[in-house]
Length: 465
Image (cartoon, rainbow, N blue to C red; front, side):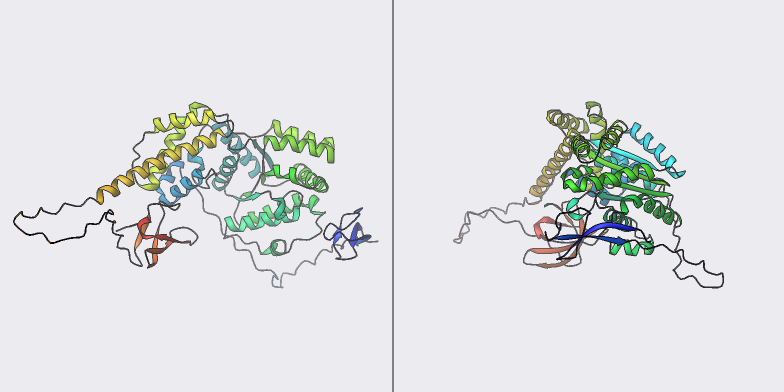
């Protein structure tokens, strides 16, 4: 007799629902119980040595070894601009994370130890716990930076219940991990997982127990292409608190199986807020069991956190931001790092929470204002014209109409094909090539890894030689 899974199917839309459902979760129709037969797995015959392989061989392209020093980021102007843009908006930058990691020596040592254990085949599960604005995303980006140094392929996934991405949907979570790997490492060959990437199953209950094995198989597949292992960063897990009460048990079962059965050269990092952790303990104790609360309590005691904000970190961090801003906009800031550290520390101490984020955003804002002042002074000085010579008293003066409006500054002479730099608007500091010019507006193709076009007025551009 073939094994079966009991479920309930809707008589109206044929949707497969959980066993014991009173109505269809999709349309609300009447459901009836059924038994779904599981297919029996048959081991395929081993190919003979004379037969040609049916699957294309995997092209083993070893990833490039990363041996850059943290201060090398100052030589890449485009990367510095992206870092300043991310810091100004309160996000953790994708580049230069090691250079900005102030006060994280202990956390880096612990992460290095975890990577060493993972490279020897011992799976590691890390927990990044903290309040909003206290550096959890920075820790995750630091883990991805260390992954590149240790030649680990990494995937960054954000828990989103509206997009079916999370612990309650393990098949869709695995699908997002695959797509993140493909986006971050375009040279990867993932043809073996084409089905999982394009059509995840609707009924994925067995994925809760198979997800650790799937990650181990994926790690072996990556090792065949020259990588040392796999890193999965799962951010904003506190969104599990927003799940429907029926979805808490699937999420718990998935996380429990990952903590118990994960093996191989895999490093899993789970990030959530302190408040979300306490709420999740209460919800899972109510909807699941006390075992879930015990697991989360152990995670809280063994978590990796950012150090508590202290004024001793102000000056080193301000100096790093000062250098990145100077390299991004090719100028020497008129304000010193000591003054930036003092003003930003006052704002951070006055904040109730998120002091790390408050300090960084304040420091960047001070540098932005100083840079704008310098540009305005240069613009005013360039508009000063020499006064015409005074006419002779004996010469008759023709009647002239006097204009009361100030003279308008001429627009820069920019033509299609010129290389320009954006000096104001949200894209200030970016460079690109002019595509077309019409009616005081110009379209610019920015110099980025992905081609991007923006349309800006001519007075927001500066022609480069």
